[in-house]
Structure formats: C-alpha cells, structure tokens
Image 1: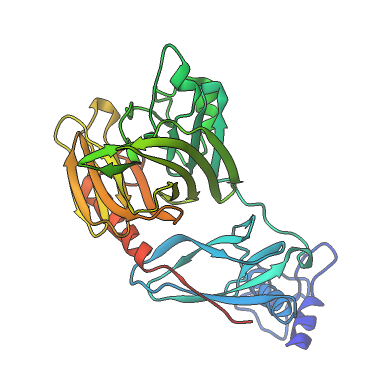
Image 2 (image 1 turned 180 degrees about the vertical axis):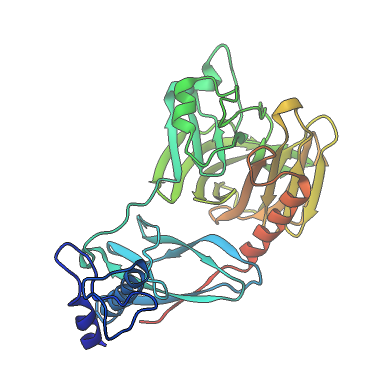
Length: 403
C-alpha cells in the first residue's frame, strides 16, 4: 500500500497538479502524460485521506474509542463527553473528518451524528501531531450582564435564556424579586446575546427574534422551588455566579442562591447549567444546602398563559405550547424531570414534583422553542421532540475505550 501511494504521489507536480490521468474514453496506452481531470483529483484526495488516517492510527500516542447509539432514533449533533486529559483532536475513524471539539476543565467534549443502533469509532489525536486543525465555530455562549441590572444570560445556536441577579431587586423601576427563567425567541443560528444587549431593544424583532416571554415573579420556563405544605417556595435572585465554559460547543456556569425560608426551613442552592450547541435543552444540576438533612421535594415549573394553549404530560416530562401572542407567534417550553412523582396544575403553573436530598445532585432539563424559529411549527412537532429528548436522557450514548 505504501508503494502504491508513493507511485501515485510521484505524479503530483510542484504546483500541486495531478498528472498522468487517462482521459475518459481514451486508449490507456496513448494519452498525454500531462493530462488531468477532476475525478482523478477526487480519488487521489480520498486515498490520501485514508493513508493519513492509517498513519495516525498506527501511532502509539493515538487513542481509540467507540460510541454507540442504543436507541432506534437518529441522533444529530450528539455531545460525547470524555474524562480525557490533554490537548486532543477527535477524528472520525471511518471518514477521517476532524470533528468539532472543546477542551473542558476535566475532560473533552465533541459532537457527532449517529443513526439508530449505530456504533462509530473515533481517534483521539494529540494536537501537535497534526499540521493544522479546523477552527470550531462558536455556537454556545454564557455571561454575566452587569449593564442590564445583573442578568445572567446563556444561549446556543437554537435558544437563549436569562435569569435575574441582585441589582434588579434594588432598581427603583424594577424591584424584581425572581429566580424564574426567561426565554428569548431566536430565528437565527447566530449568537445574539451580546448584540441584543448592546442594542437594548430586544423586545422588538429586528429579523433575528425578540424577547416577548414575560416572567415576572413566576417560574417562567423551568424555574424551580421547594414544595412544602401544598405550596411552592422559590428562592430570591441569584447572589453569585461563575462561568465554567464559554463555548465553542458548550456554555456552562454556576449560580448561587442564598438561603431562603421554606416553611421555616432554611435552604440554599448552587445550580450548574450546561447548554450544548444544537440542543434546545439546558441540563440543570442543583445541589441544595440545608442543616436539616431530611429529603426535599423540588417543584419544577412552567408558567401558564391566558388563552388556549396545549399541554402534554409524558414520561418524566411536561410540554407546553403557549397560545399565540398575535404576530409574534407562540413560545413553547418543556421540562424533563427524571424521577418526577407528581404533576400539578397550581397557582398559574404546571409543576413536576420530584424528591431531592441535600448535598446530592438534583438533575433535570429545561427546553424552549418558538413557532417562528424554524424548527417547530406546531405543538405536535414540539411534543415529539420533547418525547425523543426524554428518551435519550434514559438511554444515553454508550462509550467504550478500544485502546
């Protein structure tokens, strides 16, 4: 194989032209030795790609893993997270394509597509062994926004959210006490947060979306509280923040909520939020602090709107397609709460209740969509996506190390 490749390579001129290509339909014994054609260039590049992959695969420093989709559905832009140290590049072992990836504080993240029941192999290559690596487009972003009364906002190429910090509680025009989750409705794959805050007119649609989702003191889309004595006790605004990752594929951050009174029991929360490129859902991991170590009941909520919307309750999930707001269309919200035991319609909210233990991670997912966003035009399509996402939560990708 090496001899064959050397023979092929000998027909590439210094300027990059591939020669000695037999023209289509001509006698292989008699043709211009300087001839070239696009089909031969394509074949040469494919062969070169395979030789390149084989050379890398034989390197002892290169590792190999397999990833299997255990479900029957096609999974597009699925995140694969590895507890892998070092500056590594991920290559698809079949196509030799370099995949988008992001170095994390404690590992590596990359994204790939997998058909139902498909298993694919990937090479983990030290970056210094490659002459060049394609840049990864920024598709996720999170930041503290002090210029807008201490908002904290996060987005990817599909959705955008924000929640509220301490300054808005003190502002005389706002005096807003809320830990609810806001939805910004996007109709573009571009990141918009910085531009929208700079414009300061995000309640108007300039062709890339707008904010017409009212939160106030409600739970908004996926905000939580502690449920006790038939009432929901939400926290006040977050008091501290920390960005853990700011793209290009994942935005991740922590928010701290100081102790609040839950029917006489002080409870505090540290909340970690992850949002990956291509996903409509943020992963939420909350840890509650309480001197009383008895279990808590967490209520994850979706605020209801006046008018006829569409509510769907699934396995460990709730989905709500809001009534249309004139020409702005409809927002949609969903939460996936593994272990949810009870669902309520109470005080203007749909609530999913699930048990939690102090100092133990409580994990759920919140997602949103817009009827004019280009992905989901009606409630039925959104419900199907929520059900598929909930299924993927219970059937995660299977990762195996080969070498």
